Length: 208
Length: 168
Image (cartoon, rainbow over all chains, first blue to last red; front, side):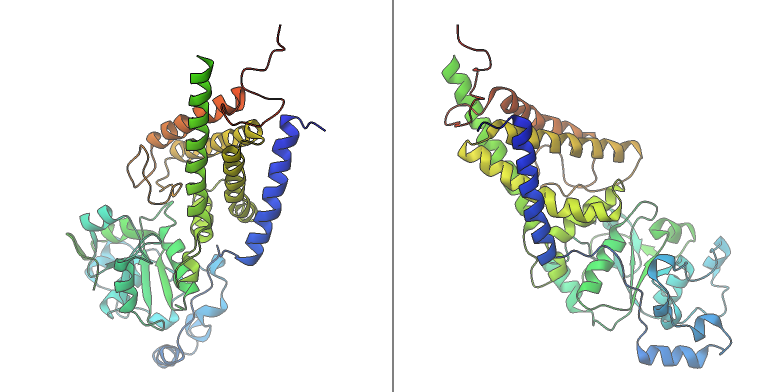
């Protein structure tokens, strides 16, 4: 029996689909982010500092699906850069996606920031004190160095270029896969941070 | 002359097979102790970044494409069903190229992740029109093999090189 080219192509595709399906079943991939989970200690602190009637204080961020979670607070304005906000929201009360104003509050609290953009973009300008970590470098020596300084229970803020940028979400999926639960992503990314005049730095660096 | 062409086809066939075996390995390799750092995970995220396929098709493409590359590469190496394998690789490359063009036309800034750390023509970093040219450059030998067969040591029948017209 002689098969035509088209039949042979279909046979190869069929075999590829069978093997691929088996491989996917054995080694599933993750594309969706789990919601951020507040640590019990942090949540207690948040409850103590937030009025009971506050919807954010009484409803843990973890109970909200990540996909439908809005940015943590109102849309920031340039006046936010002056630090006029009286009390930044507690980290435990924040969801997965946050805005730059909430992120600035976390920076002031000493939370670690991870820059998921390309190395040259990071060296050019980055959020003050941020470490460089991407899905490409996470298993390399640079990534190991950064991960070694972090506890899985630590809150971490991730950002990339905003807009179409998926790098921070992709990195967050990987970090959740190794046990990080208190992750926050700056929804509009670095451009919003810069537009608000929040602190940046430049030059080589990026590891502890 | 025919011998030279068969030699060129054989070399192109083996080079194409090596390239796609390498590309497939990048998409299939296991992660380090970070389980989430596996080739499939990175490949799935790369496909998702293109924002062309719905999520369930991203999962399907993640599982199937690397194995198609492996199968086609192996067929090219052993010289069986070479024209079919080359056609399939050409179709895959055409699809990849269309996806890259779509990303560029939409003004998106993405890294490809096609060949891992290997750089062929284009520098590492954000994709540009260079990636389209690179894909077309790889597409050319695939189409030649699909049209003329794999040259020496090609056991493909009836599609032997230059045997498309009946003798006489």
